[in-house]
Length: 222
Image (tube, rainbow, N blue to C red):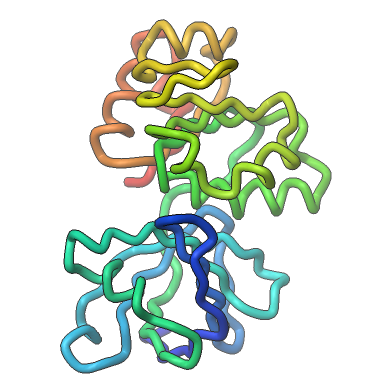
């Protein structure tokens, strides 16, 4: 499947820096929850600037959904997407990615790295298979959390917020380190899904291995 030009149906900020895009879904377009697509803006000067973004929708939905963190200071594609509204068009690649559900486990996300897990959790909820999974979600502050209310509704007591730069009663304020992982996780023989920045994935994966997880049990983007 080659790249396809698609219309933006809806575009609105759902927080100070997260923008929700509802995008036309091409005919017969399917993906695995957890996968991503390369996206460019279909206008002069931007139509070859592709960046990967993760689907947060389900295959059963009429359209595609992306929740994209906007970085206006970077002057790149997300800054331009921050100014992109309904009626604009994007260039969409075929789906790709190594993150997909392989069975119950602990999901560990840093910042916008939670987006592939949103689609997975929505699909598991639909299939009534979500109860045996846990999410540890690390952010600087509460304002950085993406769809926190929905995640809490989906996972109940298996949803853990970890804030690294905000003192909030009832929440931790420290780096997500080995001590924190030991507090949150009692069994390191289970499966782990890790997504975030390259340094986050590298550091968390390394700590999990040191604590007894196996390389085969880690599901990360390659």
